[in-house]
Image (tube, rainbow, N blue to C red; front, side, top):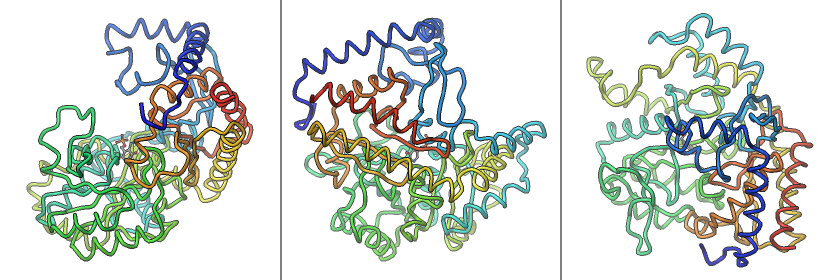
Length: 454
Ligand code: PMP
């Protein structure tokens, strides 16, 4: 529990038990399915992440459309989690579903290209500025692939990341700084292959002198970053930070990789387009297939050529980049349809307007009850944290963590039919999210803050 944490732990515990009782009473069907699943699924879930939701058992879903889903107890929910961005388009977006259904009936995976591949790549090029694209099934795998190419073409070993970054299950990225500034394993890192200090250098977000020291070693193949941190709360770049990142990476021969998987919330081409950033490679995943597995990495023409020139055709299939289903026809038609018909510039305007409303609603309750919290927005996504001012780097954001308080707020929301992104206090708006959906959160959030500070 951090120094800034909520002080009245007895009150918090009492409120928590009240919400747990309500959840138990209202979710008997989820309980039944959970008990039935447990013999064959650890904790009753197909991936242990899903056990980290607040409450005694997970909520089992029956169906979803747009910004809402219904659970097996027949309860309607406003989904502000949206599969932690996997369903950013809203659930079952009709244009994506139509294109995906048609492709499914024609075959989905061939290890051969379809016309959609080049069209999807062109759409991504228009948005993110880099011309040369490859496709994977997850953002994790796209990051992993770019890192490998960067090592290959630079002949260097290390990757540079921001402290408290998250880029998927990429071995090199589970590194953090200890109190003395040494690179150590991130808490909870499962079965690390080697100590992360062997593969990774770490700098605080927004710290230009630390960045220059790390790059000047000449050891860094790639700098892999989110342009704003979004996985430890939202941490925005200070003026001039990205210009310095670009300039220093160029000066020291390091490949700059921008992971836009979450920051695509800033607009159709993410922060890369919105802020005129100039990466050597871009990664984007989760949302772009309209709800099915699809991700991509794009490279400048120069980087793509260097990577291609370094490979022998004979070795390509066992070289560490690729995957049997990567670039399959279903993913590609999903990306084509989703980018051209769902995640359009007009859709982003609506999504951003809803996030502005959500942020104002949260701020109003913070102000009314004097909670020492702040809320930060990045386009269609926003997040509050338990500190009075926006964090400047990941360590500051992490220090504001209060797991029990977060669990209470999430369960309070869930009991009122609102799903907030787990592991965060984050809300994401889809093209289908309405002002009425946002109001539902605003009302429930006010009630929760009142219960704590009123
Ligand atoms: N990059 C970023 C910035 C992410 O937030 C995540 C997941 N939260 C990933 C990559 C990995 O995505 P996936 O789990 O779909 O591979």
